[in-house]
Length: 481
Ligand SMILES: Nc1nc2c(ncn2[C@@H]2O[C@H](COP(=O)(O)OP(=O)(O)O)[C@@H](O)[C@H]2O)c(=O)[nH]1
Ligand SMILES: [Mg+2]
Image (cartoon, rainbow, N blue to C red; front, top):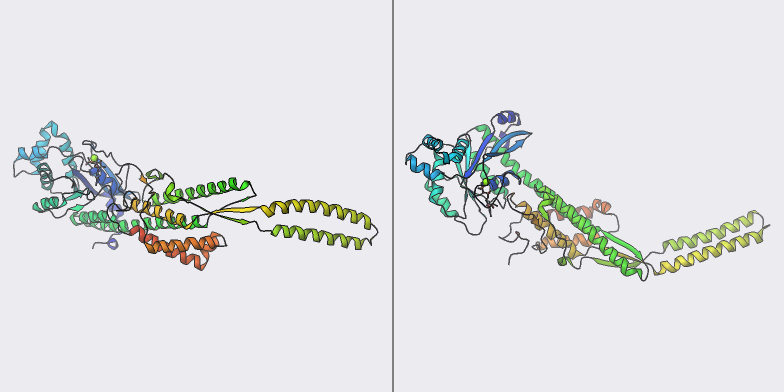
């Protein structure tokens, strides 16, 4: 393999002088613009619509490295007049015949521009919607492009839709002796598909510098995916840890209890929502999306019961301290009496009685309240911790595979697919331990037990992200039936 080791970064300047130029061509509405968006991870590139003629002119997106353009991927409008050109130019046509034909026909202006762009490229990606049957007009387009002598790679788009004519398209291209096709789906990104596409490109490019760069680029796709998985795994583990360690606490007496319990429940919900939102944003960014690409309608009923309340009487340590203080005061009075030799015994006895009375009244009132005082503590129950992890994993899995051409935000599932039993075990153990912990979260994380739990959780969550799921399992967040 022409790998990263063969590409020297000293040659970036040479490459920037002659970047790789790729033209994406094909019939209108087969997903050319969408493929570019997903391939370049650029959801704002061009216009995508379910109607013909949205792309009106040639538009490039650029792949940069160190602020220099290494590759240009050019979008084109749909080819429309290939069949007319072939009919006019005869079976043994040359590309110059077609150029002349397009030049002389005013209605072929768009096709003339596309052909001009194709002829300036190092390779062409010919995008077809594989959910449609191959038709004669597509064959004419493909033949025309192949005569340009620029290498053509057929991209069988719409790969993940349930009904496709993939085999027929493959037969069709092979009949023209073209075995370079590759599958793609602009709505469901797969780093493996990206990689296969770039491997195909590397096969057809002539320049060794271009080939070497693509080798490095392919390598960086894998690395970037690993980085993104790592970042989103950490965000999920962080969410579970922080939620499980969180305490919402209030002190209350008698009738205040109902109101304080509600306040604790509200605190807890707000805190969890904030933690979740932070984790979801981190996950979205890890995969190249923004906050706007995620829609979370909240925890909903599926999270109920969302908290566990614990009540316990407030420790009485301060009361002991108070009593100790009084005793110390009395002892102090006795010492003074001794020092002044008992000459003003009556005066100090009166003062001592007055102070004792005030202290007694205060401490009796405080004791009265504190004996009834309870601490209401809201903690995250294990089921909610699991639920938060399931939702975050489902979101990460979906964003990890989401193309950049899909409309609307990614919904956070309220009935996410279940995690594997090993993951559930590790999660339960972690949450239970965090609920038992007596030190701060930061200190617990540094303990040996904390580190072991964290590493175990990181490992199982990362496996969950990479776990291949059945069709439909993860798409709408509902488990497959
Ligand atoms: N399901 C699915 N829809 C796609 C795919 N590629 C494109 N589309 C949709 O097909 C329509 C046309 O896409 P567009 O990129 O504008 O096609 P273009 O005219 O060839 O550039 C849009 O509604 C896209 O969202 C795909 O791989 N899968
Ligand atoms: Mg388009």
